[in-house]
Length: 178
Image 1 (cartoon, rainbow, N blue to C red):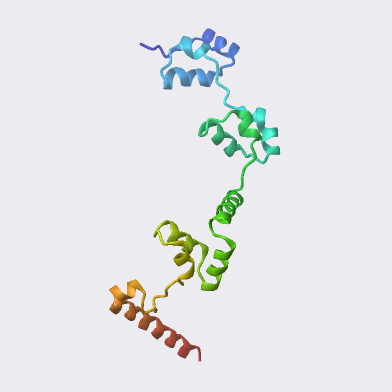
Image 2: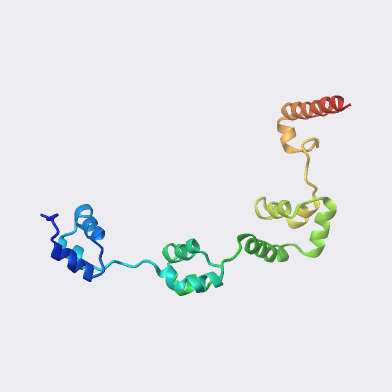
């Protein structure tokens, strides 16, 4: 059974060990530690930031980033403080440019521009839909008003309703602006 009474001598021992009176009380009364452990166990100093603050700030590493690198990623304080923060947008763009560079040739990109096909559309046609490259870059994208659109073939009534509704809105807007 734990005893909750802490003698003045025990508080003095805790003071010598660098443990405050409040911390001793918290350890014994709230955390349920025995008094001997509470007055002798040193306080853990989690403030690694104080040591590395100057170096981290020179490298543009903020406090939260520093600690998340240590706690979540398991990095050493040296690596966490010295590795500069990468801007997400710049890094993603660099990756995208590097990736995009080699996928389509300059000739294919020119054909795509002529046919009004965006890079993403052609890429998805090749990778997801397994179209051959020539078809993916040369077949222009379909609009809903196109007679050959697969959606229109299946749901002709619904599509024509939406097109008429859209045209009706345009007419109403043009009449009200006069």
